[in-house]
Amino acid sequence: MFGDKRVSVVFPAYNEESHIRRAVEDFFSSGVVDEVIVVDNNSRDATAREAGLTAARVVTEAKQGYGHALQRGLREASGDLVILAEPDGTFVGRDVLKLLAYSDDFDMVCGTRTTRELIWEQANMGWFLRVGNLVVAKLLQVLHDGPSLTDCGCTLRLVHRGAFLVIRERLTVGGSHFLPEMLILALKARLRVIEVPVNYRGRVGESKITGTLAGAVKTGTRMIALIVRHRLTS
Ligand SMILES: Nc1nc2c(ncn2[C@@H]2O[C@H](COP(=O)(O)OP(=O)(O)OP(=O)(O)O)[C@@H](O)[C@H]2O)c(=O)[nH]1
Ligand SMILES: [Mg+2]
Image (cartoon, rainbow, N blue to C red; front, side, top):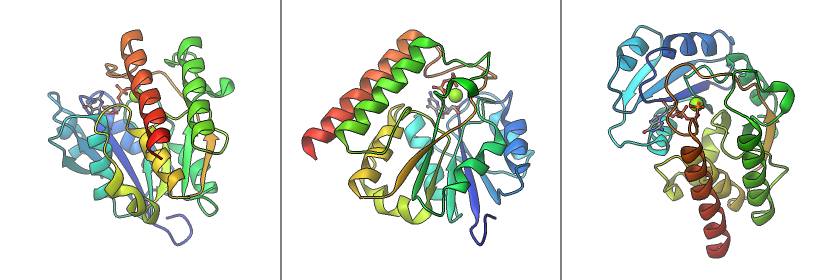
């Protein structure tokens, strides 16, 4: 609970058997999380079984894709405040407190992974990815009249359930560029959005999106196309 509000955490999970248990435990240990939902996205490993050994609720999303998994989790979550995260060891459970600290004043609180002091040594956030994230976020900020943005691809973010209900029918992206769409729809709906710095650590297990240069460029290109398209169609 945070004040009188229930807090849910959503983990999209595709082959995350190596860290899922510890991730669920880490986020619960923040002391404020009431519910963790693991969205198993057709994992071929023991993700579902491992998650089943924790206090998390495990749901299966058949539509393959990062965005599909997150949308499913957002629909399943029962909390007043819903926090999206990843179960791969990159995020720190106690950072939910940073998001919650702003939740009274904002509808959506997005983490940013580009704060140099909070990028851990093993993290996949070298110069290219960091600057790439900064540039894409600034493009979104300028074209959509947003607050100061330095990262629009950080899964760790909080949204009020009521705010999600405002945008949910307009969400279309099932793939890796889901997060900027969520942000743009929130800005278009005049929801209050802010960004806060969060820790970014090295990953446990196999990377699926930005682990390769090709993967990072592909996702970045999709994000830019989405940001520009949304501006043109207002
Ligand atoms: N790529 C991908 N990820 C999925 C899918 N379904 C769920 N996920 C989860 O979405 C999250 C993001 O994928 P990651 O491989 O961590 O990608 P990333 O965060 O860009 O990069 P790294 O953490 O450095 O590997 C992870 O928690 C995945 O398990 C899917 O169909 N594709
Ligand atoms: Mg990750």
